[in-house]
Length: 235
Image (cartoon, rainbow, N blue to C red; front, side, top):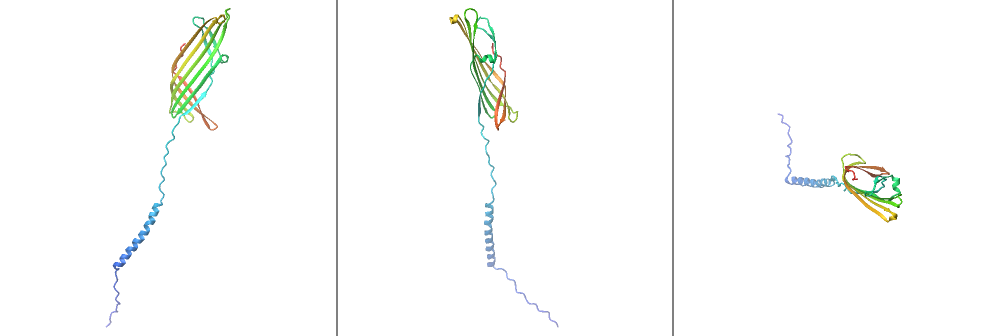
């Protein structure tokens, strides 16, 4: 009779007790507490997004310019006093220089953004004398003064290009012509004087062209004014 081989019995498995489970839990918490500051440090050192800097546009300022100029003119017309016969006067600019007493001519320009202000002043004085051969020593003396004052405001039109501006303008032009005439005879014993003043005010409408020319890196405005709408001066 054969007996079955004997088997060695295995010892029963031991389950982890409460103390071992508590140690594992404490060790896990310790590892997590050490890793959390590292992650927090990484988040703290992360670069913040750069804030977009906003700079307001520069404030526009008024620009001013003043110009002194010369105006070469001539005279053509008839000259008379009271009921005496008139005689023609035709003087070129070269002739006027010999009778020139003085003049003031200048213009002023102010600009800001689309607005333009313009002013112009013209004043001149001429004088002349003429002897009349009538046997009585008659002499005619003439003095003439001319004043022209102009002013206008303009607004830039939405056309043009770099270095070229075109503005619509509206303003006025005041003119005053003063003539002093003296007719004397017999060495001034007999004399007649007359002062005649003519003045008028005209509305002015037109266009202003501003052309910038670059010289040595600088931009120089060259204003050109074209006026219309002025009625003719009274005779």
